[in-house]
Every structure is written in C-alpha cells, then in structure tokens.
Amino acid sequence: MSELAVAALRLGLLLVMWILIISIVSSQGRDLMVGARNKVRARSGTGTPVAAGAVGAAAVAQNGSSEAPPVSGGQSASPPARPLATQLVVTEGPLKNTVVQLNGTPLLLGRAEDADLVLEDDYVSGRHARLFPQGSRWFLEDLGSTNGTFVSGNPLSRTVAVEPGTPIRIGKTVLELRS
Image (tube, rainbow, N blue to C red; front, side):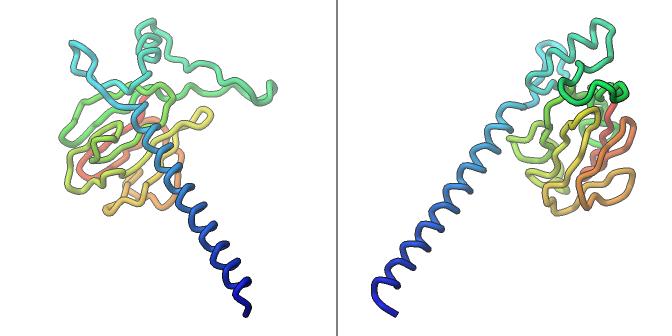
C-alpha cells in the first residue's frame, strides 16, 4: 500500500473520530439544558414543589378548569382529546403526599441534583426515569437504571403509556398521575 493511501486512511479515521466526539458533546449539552429548564422548586410559602414553567397549570387549576390547552395540529375530524394529567403525586415513600404540578413538560426522575424530582433513595439511579407527554397521554421510560422502574408492579422494559391512577414504583417511592 502506498504512503499516500495510508495517509488518506489515517486522515479519514481522524475525521470520523472528531465527528463522533462533537456529536456526543452536543448531545450532552442539549440534555443538560433540558434538565436545567425543568427544575422542581418549592412554591414560596406553601412548600409544594412545582416544575419550572408550571405556574400556568396551577393558575388553570385554581380557576376551576381541569382541561389541558388544546393541541394544535392534527386532523380536525379526530375525536376530542382527553385532558392531559396535570399532577404527579407521591403516594408512598419519603416524599409521601408531595404533589408536582405538571405543565405538559418532560420530567426527569432520579437521585441526581439535576433531576426535576429528586428522590433521595439508595435504590434510585442518578438519572433513573423520564416521564414525558405526547398528545393526550404521558409516557414513562427507564433510563438504564440499576434497580429498574415498575408500572403496576411490572418491570419496565420499554417506553409505556401511563394512565392516571397507575402506580409507578422507583426504589421506595410510588408515584401516580392525576388529572
């Protein structure tokens, strides 16, 4: 093989390696930005955690309307969409009776400080699971946790739709969606 071919091959491999490194770094940066945008913080005076940007959902709930805002797009002939659940309630565990107001934004669950709902439990991974809306339903995915995520007592092996009232177990904590 000629020296020119070897040099071209080395340059090509070096280029592929840098493209891979840049894509990994940009992916991590996007992931960190999403986590920073959705932090759970205590509402002043009440001690109730609220996801960032969920003030609108709380205001709607105070006005007596439990309907989610209409989803734009799609076909007009489709049946009316059911309202999207607006609360995540902790029913068992150290944070029992904690209510997180959802505003149709994804929620990262885990032990890490950058999680939207921090679960301080040895059986919970740093970035354990993600709860996200799609259309009029919420979906749950396990993010490769060590001890797993359970929906209605069954281990989660893929992303699944979660209906309101369905128990979600992460470590010692049990959560459920409510409208």
